[in-house]
Figure 1 (cartoon, helix red, strand yellow):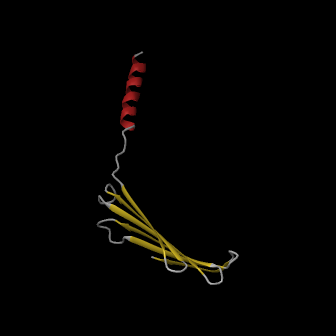
Figure 2 (tube, helix red, strand yellow; figure 1 turned 30 degrees about the horizontal axis):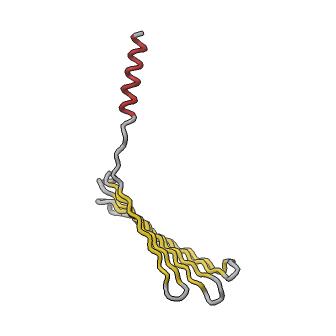
Length: 122
């Protein structure tokens, strides 16, 4: 009976320590802007900034920006340009990362892809 009581007490003690909630103060800011330009252009920009004070060296910042621009052509097709930028900033780290990808797609009036370009910059 003593063994059963000791095992039960130790299981309860372990469960109380194991289920301790993790506290994170991660802050996320999101901003979305839609712009309809003169003529036939529509642009959408989304920016997300995540700050994690418990990260590497007590403060990392991740920033992601996506811009999508759609332009109607005179022939009835569309040209779509998507540019995505991701940056990671950690204080005290020499080589912070920043990556930019750019995609350009041209479609005709039926929706078929005429031209496609893809570019990555680091």
